[in-house]
Length: 119
Image (cartoon, rainbow, N blue to C red; front, side, top):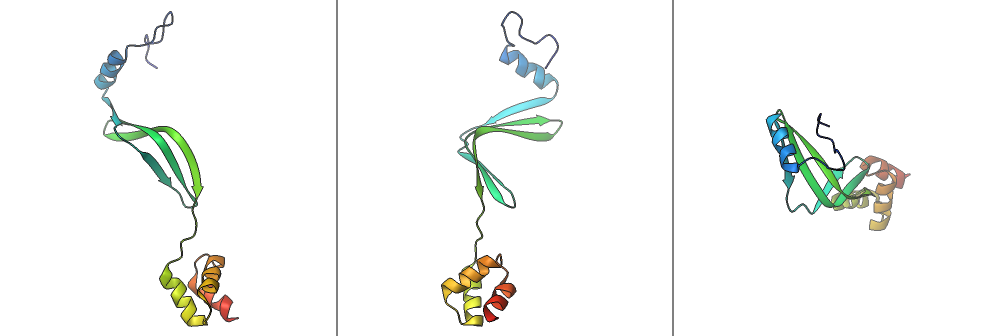
């Protein structure tokens, strides 16, 4: 990574010397303590990283996060608010179970669920 810093004869670079060189170049690295898990939320799923080690590298005012741990991806499930179920039930006269099913089938779209049950 840095000239003259490679391992010669099986020796690596002294971590204190490496840290000093990085500081001279304006690079600051901090380890976040006591991290339990990191969650990255996407449109379709959550990526949960357990036993996470998080380092923050600051270079010229910009922060970069490095995360190392045990990752698993969990698909998001559609959450249907109780108010939406109640509204569909009131508008169509169906049971809670039928209203919930229609909302799931319509991906939470109230108008579509009501129209499907009214047809």
